[in-house]
Length: 187
Length: 174
Ligand SMILES: Cc1ncc(C[n+]2csc(CCOP(=O)(O)OP(=O)(O)O)c2C)c(N)n1
Ligand SMILES: [Mg+2]
Image (cartoon, rainbow over all chains, first blue to last red; front, top):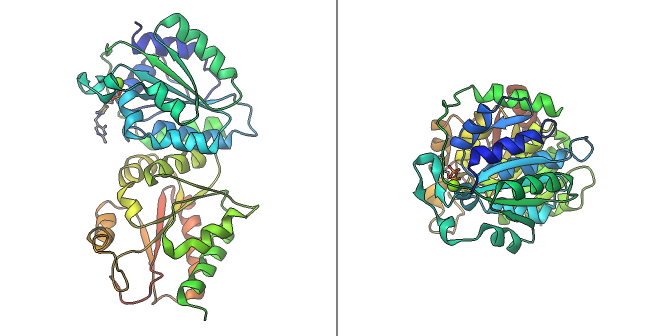
């Protein structure tokens, strides 16, 4: 099984001109370690909110050239805010894409077991009527990323990953600056 | 007979329209049904329901980062469902939005639990430094739409979420 960093390296290749919002904890840190870009919005807290923010952004992209707005969230985060799946289903934002990195644990806080070890998040998303792709290796993940970006409609990419956490320095930038760069990129 | 509540709803509708907002996100309170119904049929503002206020703050933040302006219309207990997102996202990331909040608790309230959140809420918001303007019977109704319009402008000018809270039930300050 691939690690989160392996998966992020793949995603990085295909998202140079696509807004990407990454979740708090180690995900934003690993994502930033690959090279910072203004199309990235690094969330430093508010666990579970990236799918919601990505919905809002994707609504504003209707008349813009970007193919998608991608939210990256963990299994813990998605189960903290499944409401975002309900909203995505109801609003049907064409350019919304959610990647769920499912390691069946709270990796960023030390790998404690999460509820996803007994819940299939792809089925949860399907239960909300969302189109879903499930992958458990790097090759399939790469194909799924390429395919999902071209998809005309909301899509959830549920990626099983291992529990590895890369040690990276904390992101303690002023969030106002992080938001300003991202917003300037969008507008 | 036209009630205080009817007149207040008209003023709130007028205020929201005057802000020129692009989106209205709603989670109903029984007192503002008229406002929500009005905007369901609006062709200038896109309105939609949310299932939880925290998700709403996230969606509104995305809309704002994308260059459009959102208003959320919720009841005050919904702040309890969203205060983390308001502080650690909208406020920390300087994301403008207007949050319109109807008051519960106080005179006229028949619910036997809601007061335990609604009464301390102004102190909670002050402690969290979330800027809140309060409208009640002491502010002439004809000023309410102006306050809503100014609230939206203030949110944009000061780059943060602004709450305008109104007590439609009348009665004394809580
Ligand atoms: C409300 C809240 N509770 C707890 C935390 C602490 N916390 C930060 S990251 C994290 C783990 C998130 O798990 P998951 O979404 O599965 O991501 P992973 O680290 O496994 O990739 C937790 C519990 C938090 N930031 N916010
Ligand atoms: Mg996890």
